[in-house]
Image (cartoon, rainbow, N blue to C red):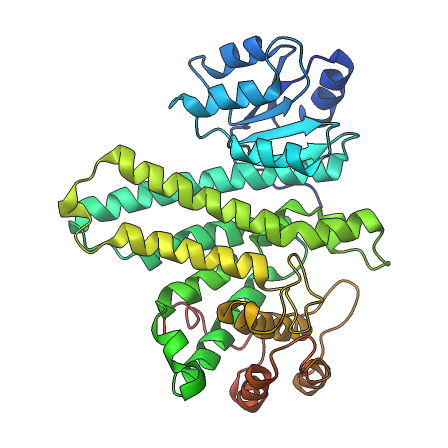
Length: 390
């Protein structure tokens, strides 16, 4: 499948590297899809970025003779005109500390050389999509605030961001993602509705904004946008490199959601909408929604026995919302068709999940889910819109 065309006007990508061979390679890889601008020095990169039409994304080498990539990124993020441009580092440096420094400076991503073209294209698309989603969130929030004088509902804005990301996700991937995510959202609502009446979970769930939780659930797999389609749909055993990409998608998802939250927070501050437009504390609720989405994105692949990823959390150290998400996410995935297998029946899916009781899944939560599952409609049987509001 070809990579998704983001719109009729091709995005502008600035590639910065002091090696002309790398620049020529990047130009050949990307010029059919993007408008490419090239710079061999950090100073030239800043000059191009600060021109009348800034690039939509910057691919930036770290090791350069005049200004290194870290300094170029720092200056880009310090200037309001360029601060929201996604920066992806391209470098042979592969130490964790180098990644931390890049992310601390505001970089969106970090790709090591030699560069894999499918990974590069997937990451560029991801961050251009996220930028578009943020712009739409900002425009929507401003419009709501002006129209309703503070009555804007943040879960609607969060849902807008989720829908935008899911739309691009579904269009870019051959997996039938959208029905799966909305179906698991519906299952999550049903499971939580059952648990709020149980003393063991009532207090923990009482402190949550459940509507925001349900909308946040739509974003839990946004990190998979950074994993090439060829890896996601591979029917053969994964290589170590491919497995690493899958294992890191929760981290990438958390970073992407944090960037969404940061952009929204900054836009609210810069717009200076005033207390009359935020009387219902909608900004804080929206940021709470993104915080929940970040937790779900990072931890929905943890396992009860501690053998999950990315952090190897075990038992109740895994946040409750992530333990809930893990159950409904796996159930929806088992019911879904994949390029490498047909869908499982409800009975088969539940049997497979019960085999993971106490190892993969929280045993008490799983028992509750299994008892509730016969009441769920089949995948694809949820009416349009039924998953969006309780």
